[in-house]
Amino acid sequence: MSDAETRTHSALHVLKGAAQKVLGTNLTASVYVSGERGRLTVQALRKPTPEELGTVEQEANAVVREGAEVLEFEMEKEEAEKHFGDEIYDMFPVRKEVPMLRIVRIPDWNVNCCREKHVENTSQIGEIRLEGTRFRNNKRLLEISFRLLT
Image (cartoon, rainbow, N blue to C red; front, side, top):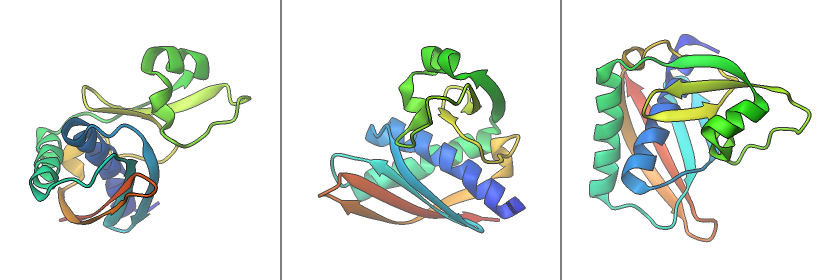
């Protein structure tokens, strides 16, 4: 994974936290990263307003400017589920026989089971600019496309 893709992947976690806070979305259905562009697809009940999307972008960039620590650690699967709940998996199944999970956590913002590489601090991500959305009503999915400004 390139440096740009590490920053973009880390931005997905920041953006997910902002979407949860502003839109009430909880589960990620898919992610896509290519260089400094990415797409987060989350479960959603409705299409957000332009104002809500502006707030998502503002909240995400506030966390980037804050320079929050990005923690990565391993936990036993059972302990992680007790501590963080099943939402750490989003919609990505983990086989029953997997005993240890790799967790990424931005304190008070986002926690997920994730095996990718991340930045150490959100200030390393750079500014996040939302580029577009697509709401798929039949599947209740919201795709949020973005790019990083360097």
